[in-house]
Image (cartoon, rainbow, N blue to C red; front, side, top):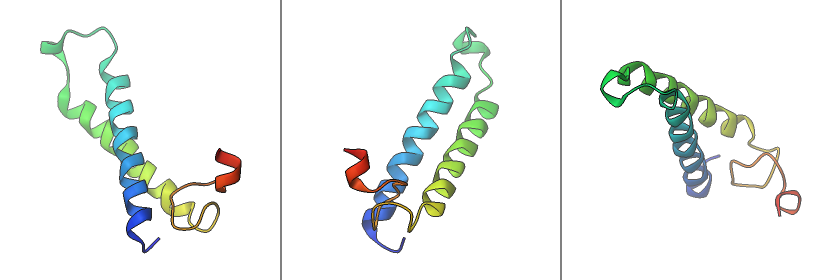
Length: 76
């Protein structure tokens, strides 16, 4: 958990999760001028925080020095 590789992996996962959650919240057929950007970003940020916490909890479970929950052989 204290390596650069772990945090690069964790940040990548969190950014992907944030983008996915933001797209999911915004993709409900609402015109762009009616979007609730503050609430949508709040929901997406919450998903990103949960992603980071999940990565931290995965330490020692999967591949060493990564945020993965599975060993490399099981992910390939």
